[in-house]
Amino acid sequence: TRLNHLIDKGYERITLQLDLGGESPGYLEKDKHYREADAALLNVIYPANLSKINTRRKEQVLKIVK
Image (cartoon, rainbow, N blue to C red; front, top):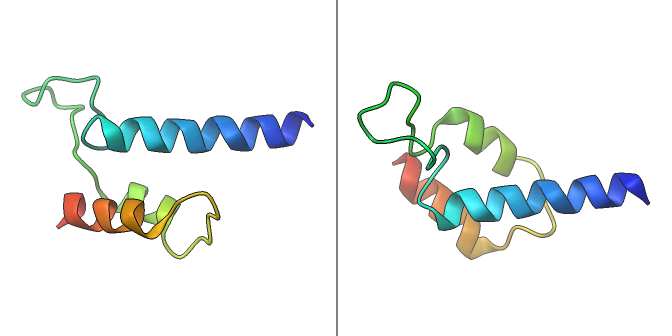
């Protein structure tokens, strides 16, 4: 269904962003838009039970935010 497709695209985006090092990897570190991760990313990951985000990914988010 269209909804399932959109859900899968969302998971793909989360995975890509984490693989690239954080929340906004498209910006240079000196750019004001650059963030490794913040509470917004935590709100996506916790406490939501995202079935396709495994424990390793969740730990990665916590490490980035830390």
